[in-house]
Image 1 (cartoon, helix red, strand yellow):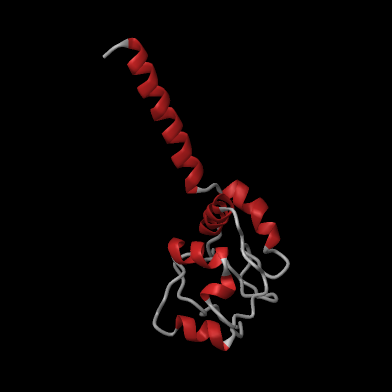
Image 2 (cartoon, helix red, strand yellow; image 1 turned 180 degrees about the horizontal axis):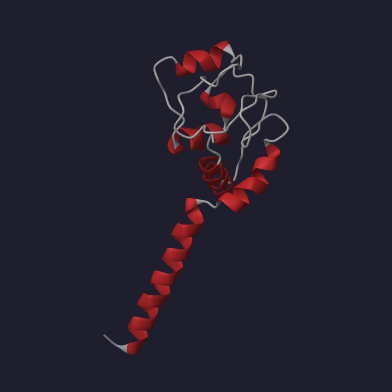
Length: 129
């Protein structure tokens, strides 16, 4: 393999590796983006605000945080045992009312895929202690 072809291959490898790492999401950046959510939710305390605590939400069944009164729409959405996995959270965070019409959540959603990935990375670190 020629030196220039090796250089191009190595450069492509570096670019793809950086892209993939960036797309995966970062908890530190997610904590910053989560500030948009912080008026209604907490991710570090097991207490409800206007919205339910999001501590431990990744992997939790939909509409099950103790002591929070969910909308009938959210309760119905979770009746079949849906779980807040990364894919479902990604879709919901992009357009909450489109995914769950009738939800009480008035937040219009996060438009940047990277912000969504970052928030999910942050929420994955916010586990019950």
